[in-house]
Image 1: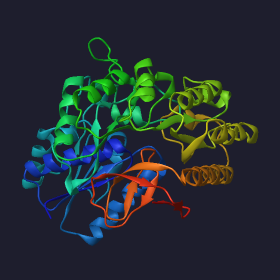
Image 2 (image 1 turned 90 degrees about the vertical axis):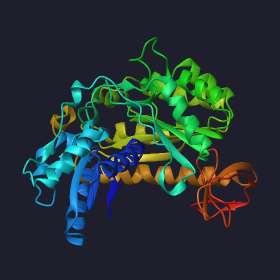
Image 3 (image 1 turned 90 degrees about the horizontal axis):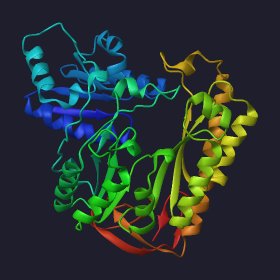
Length: 417
């Protein structure tokens, strides 16, 4: 084993893990496991710590390096773990010199574990070209933005990622072209606050403009997809692209978080319930077959049963297909952690109700797909996904191909074609 990277959390971390693997390998590190951590919930941090302990038991000779959002926000905690040999900051992990310094520290048996810079001082974002993802994946990620300028009261991520910064359009288009030419059929644009893309660049180009430039200048790209977006920041070019660009997939994941106006205000979100519903209705007018997902938090501080019911109603009122449910988890240092907390039993019950509503919505969408003909990206010899990100059971197909298939049924978890 040279370098193995284990990824927790978001799609952006998945992209960055590919960069880490190459930079750490190029620095000459050997027998090294890198934990690319997530800080979005207490559970995510606990999972990273458990994995570190397990990996050290299984591979006692391996060096363990921790990086990612949890390493940035809780560096001392990870450094105090006897299993950990090095803690690297979230911006530092993308720099060659951090990995060369890590190898040097290991070579001289340095006792200095922490190499974490000031993430808030980072103002620019260099493009990181991943010229061919491992395993020949049909779907790959391209990082176009990092950080967040907003301060939602529950969120620790800005302190792990820093302020919002964007990759200029030209390098993004070049990277997408490179990946498309090397056979990756679908590109997912990803970032921490994706719809803030371009605000820090000359001329302040928006995400919609970037999408149009990619599709215009990379005709060989089969499919373009977006990761999570914030509806309040969706620009007119993006809405125009959703309506008119067939290669932009009809699937969006929205950062909604709650369906109650008072809770949204206490979260310091910038949209209201009515805006969220109106936005989803607008999307369905522009692209009638669009599939929508959403993040929703269960049991945010001060949330009553009536407030929660309004979140539960969003599944139907917004026409959601995919639900990502977060049981509220207080993050140290955030304003929400100091608010009156909801009982853990109520949080668990509400999260269970939301997940049940999400499962019912997914079943409804799977049933509605029967009889349709869909373009299915073959991910493996057993799994494909439609334009709407719905899973399809396949057999014997070549990964990377896009096949037009008739949907004949579903088994409750996957479409059958």
